[in-house]
Image (cartoon, rainbow, N blue to C red; front, side):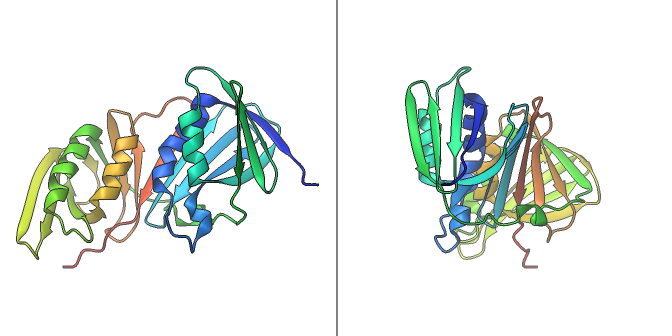
Length: 251
């Protein structure tokens, strides 16, 4: 008989954890671990992670009361069901899990999910520890700019180029096949050497869309190393970190 871990998590935290990470799960059935949301409970801290090898999202909340240390992977479909069924307000979700299944109960609702029986990749190994250049920008301005510029990008790569220097970031894209190009400048605060880096605009748009804060900061180092995206001001007890691999510039 498998041992069962029991814990209670505020519904708002579970909803937020799934909502902030589920978009970054993979559809690649050859890597089943990445097709779900990884949930790690470490006594008073719960961490949700998802990745598809191009982008990675980690949401951590400290402040739950638990005497268990456990980890499991919730399939994407179950995560969607759970997120949509979750009550708003101050309800508590009771979670029981063993190796094969997780049981979620709240407000007279019981959801049973099979868990993905596989090891989650060591995602900490890909998170850069030293990204010294920090660019702070108004989230909505960057999001709207990317939505306008991506129309002119190559439809295969969705590549946009960020040309960042003190005072402004130039967002540009071009599609040589159709002779399309566009660029615009946004004000930013930046400390670091001028940097030109390419990203998949669709991925960056998804990330900015699930963040809610007014300003975001991008932590960067070189055009070939992953960029980190975070809200400038995090809520107490919360930490959200988004990682995006760059697209190598052709020139």
